[in-house]
Image 1 (tube, helix red, strand yellow):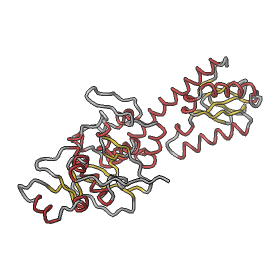
Image 2 (cartoon, helix red, strand yellow; image 1 turned 135 degrees about the horizontal axis):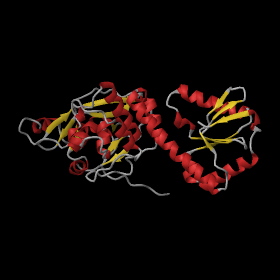
Image 3 (cartoon, rainbow, N blue to C red; image 1 turned 120 degrees about the vertical axis):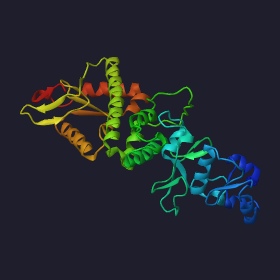
Length: 353
């Protein structure tokens, strides 16, 4: 049996270095610093200063942007009770995007407020420039410059929710156009990268993750967000469909029709599949959920798929992720579906969309 010897908690000097000189009251108390000494040090002209309730900066002078982020995070997390833990809060919104290095968002000095996400049951109030946001979901953190940040998709959703609700982004200045399209494109790796910015690998997300967070948080209903999101979805799906077409050619399959409108001979509408082989009666649907932001659209797409299946059309469902990871398996699946075929489509009219 092996025993793990617990390591001693870091000293005040070590902790201050780790947290860029930002310390909570409980962390000071745990290291034997009496409240009286803290009060004396924080008096006018003293060597320390109080940044937020129960959060102190162990130096004089103006705090750096990173120290402001640390103060916001430590205020919301109040992690002094457990050394080295900050799972109780994550930075989100524009501040997190600035930390990630988004070119569409100004650098940290221009960020006027810090949104911090905490569990719903936490009893905290906004303080100074810190705005508390609550979530019922389990917090997920990404370490950026040592700070706990929300994943990119969540940070984007929170930033856009605040910008669209207020109609302005304070970080951009009065009258500035909200960079909705730029932020969304940059989040999925399509935006411009400045040479003066360090783009971190974790500063990216998938279109699927972005759609889920924007729908959950609400900004997907804003017309500006919806237009930019539709553009991303179209670009994502066009790329995947082009790859499916290339794969069909590699496996010696005839070229399918792209987005045809399927109707019965009497004119009754059936569906608009992504790809369709008319004589074989085989349809391909790629990432169907990425077509739809609203539930009404999703129901419309599902209805078409159910009608195709009911009429005997063989429907192959593919995902862009699987296509990228297993192209040979997908090619074999398409060839087998084409070989088996679906219902005789003599009773169907195929109109190229």
